[in-house]
Image (cartoon, rainbow, N blue to C red; front, top):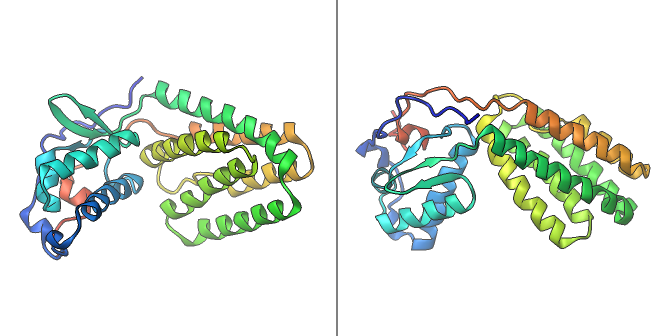
Length: 254
C-alpha cells in the first residue's frame, strides 16, 4: 500500500516577494548556493513542512532561490541520491513518498544490521566507551524536554550511530550510517509531531544489557525498540493549502 499522495497540489504558487529580505545570492559562490538550497529543502522536509508528494518544479525553485536551472537540477540530483526527492521523467520532482512495503524493508534491513553490530560492541567496548554512551543518553534525555523534535531526533539517531562506531567494523558502520539516514527521513516524513523518535529508556535498556554482557538481551531490546518506532509511523499525509514558498520558509515577512 503506497502512501497516499495529497490531492490538490498542482503547480505550487511562487511569490516574487518571497525573496524579500534574503541576502543577494549573486555574491555567493556556486558551491555555497548549492549547499544553501540543498539544506533549505532538507530542513523543511525534516521539519514536516514539505510533505511527501509535494511537487518541486525547477522553475519555481529557480525563482524562489534566485538561481539558474542548472544549479537547481544539480541540487535535485543530490536530493534524489539521498532519497529525499524522487525524479520523474518529463515531470516535476516530488518529495519522496516511500510505500509501506519500502518502509517495511528498510526497517527490516536496519534491524538485521543493528543485530549484527551489537555483539561486536559487547566484544570491543571499554568502560570508557560505556561511560561515553551514558553521557550521550543524558544529553538525549535533556534534549527531549528542552528542544524541538528535530533536534532531539538527531541525538536519538546519534546513539545508534555511536553503536556502529563501537563495533570497530568500518564497513558495518558505513552501511548502518546510510540506512539510519534513510530511516531518519522516513520518520521525519511520517511520524506524528510530539512522538519521541527513540525513547530514552529503550536506549538505556540496550546499554544496560550490553554492559552486563547480555548480548541476546540487547538484541531483543533493540529489535523491540525499532519495531515500535516503525509501528508509530503514519503513512498517509493530509493535504495542505500552503504555497511552496510558505513550505520552504521563503515567504515575505509581514
